[in-house]
Image (tube, rainbow, N blue to C red; front, side):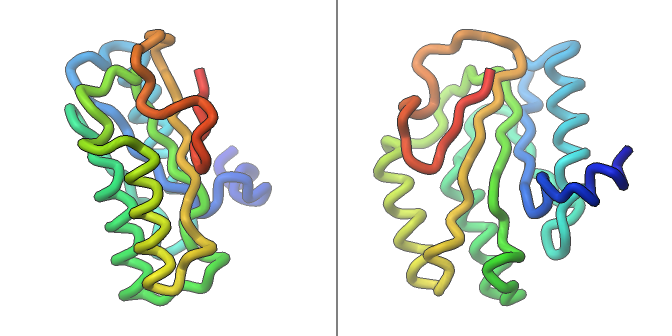
Length: 150
């Protein structure tokens, strides 16, 4: 099954960010960890096998910074960069960022442009694994570069 999914290539060069906080129990925790293991197995180097976890404050801008650091060191081509980041969570973040997402997103885009990867800013998919109906959601539903899945 994994080989078949890899051949399709829909999840190549994606990064998983799994919520392993105390609020993620039973099935949501298992799904978060399972998807967190699956997604990076379908990626290519230097991203293959890389998983990021969090338990309280996800600090998403730092994740973008780490991706950019790896890119600057390894100099992957644009098509080898992370295309999409999945955040597998119950969506009940203490806070996704200290700043509004628009401010974070603008800073992320600026940093990527400065390093020559302006066209490679990954989109982020927040995937609610517990149907928590969290309010407020971590970003506005119409935010550029973001998708919310429930």
